[in-house]
Length: 183
Image (tube, rainbow, N blue to C red; front, side, top):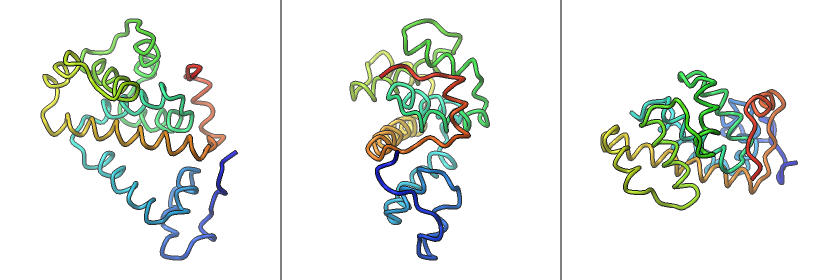
């Protein structure tokens, strides 16, 4: 159960009701701080709508962060979102394989993206070898956007963990289909 009450549009001043255009639990909690919610959403919109990083690679990085942190909320929501960006079920299963050190059918750049997300999440740094693979496959802007994405979602999973946000019932099916590791 969440540590703060979930807000509804009727709980907000009229000028802040747009924060709940999507009635999901994350937004219902972030609405306790309308200015904070707007600031977080500005970066999220950039990542989603303006970044030139390939959307499939972006989603793989986000899923990897959710997977290794055990963030059921982030992971389940982004499984659903990822399907709109050519992330296949095989790609999602590859995250578990790559995390466990087993081979997958992902291409070298996708593997490096997953490794970078794991390394930045766990160790706060990336090896020279992985950076070199990323550097060969991404220009400066896309490389920086990858790191912005990984950093942003690391912040979000920690925020969600602190607030103990509940996964909505309609997203639980994704956790059943693609289980999280025991963290």
